[in-house]
Amino acid sequence: MNACALEVKGLSIKFGAFTAVDDVSFTVRRGEIFGFLGANGAGKTTTIRMLCGLLVPSSGSASVGGLGFEDGGKGIKRIVGYMSQKFTLYNDLTVGENLDFAAGLRKLAPAFAKKRRKELFELIAFDKPLSTMVAALPGGVKQELSLAVAMLHDPEIVFLDEPTSGVSPASRARFWALIRKITGLGKTVIVTTHYMDEAEQCGRIALMRTGRLIALGSPAELKASAFPGPMAEIDFKGAAPAGFLDGLRAAEGLLELSPHGMRWHAAFTGPAAMQAALRGLPPGADVRAIPPSLEDVFIRLVEGSGR
Image (cartoon, rainbow, N blue to C red; front, side, top):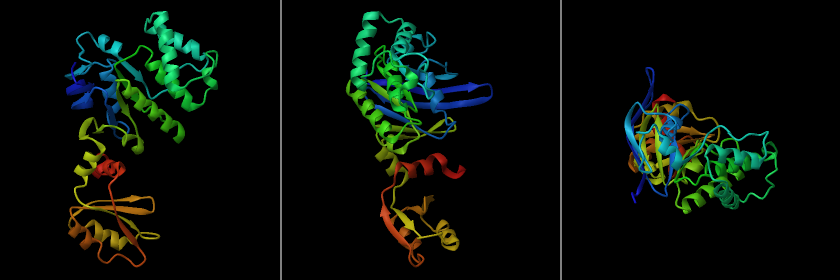
């Protein structure tokens, strides 16, 4: 069996004169949690929709579970599950009616659909009656049920587009525990997220900006690549002195300077550059060495000079 669940080469799509995804190439290993990170409009969702067979690329190629777009994506749709950003279940139907409707759309045999429903309810620990109205469920449970519906046909690859948007931190943690369970069952998960703590849980992350893939690697690899030198967190204990900040921005060896709440993160090319730049720190200010976070990587690589 091919070790790659996805092989993407030069994938692009245009809508008129607008290029939404521009020459994207990457691979995803079977059983991997692969994340897409980027600002709104970066091309994450459009890339996922192409890989689900919902959009036909303008150029490039992709192998999804060994299948391509030769049949218009029909084969791909049979082996992938897709959970969109927008909640797609029907609030005015019961849990059972939603599942039956999804099984009918997939043309699943009744016995298989019933078996899968039992397996998925055990996976998400859903213990409410099938007669429960979806509108009556908490937001986090609705998302878990959406995941179950996306996996009803037992797909090899599961695409999750911002699956935890708008739910509580506890529900987000529970949902990510489910994602890890899914990959433990041999499934491959591709997920988009705006939460940096969630991105940390991905095996690898693709950072996108204006339709292009600008960085790819594990969280540790991205941090090491974006920040090869030391980073300091500065707490001025109040408003940052404009004069000192101006001098710091002009300091030799400064890679990045960005505000984080009431504190500032400053990254440098090396220890000597950091010591020289922070000499003359205002009285009362605190400084400590810190490791870079994915938020720092996002600010430096994704937002960049455009912020």
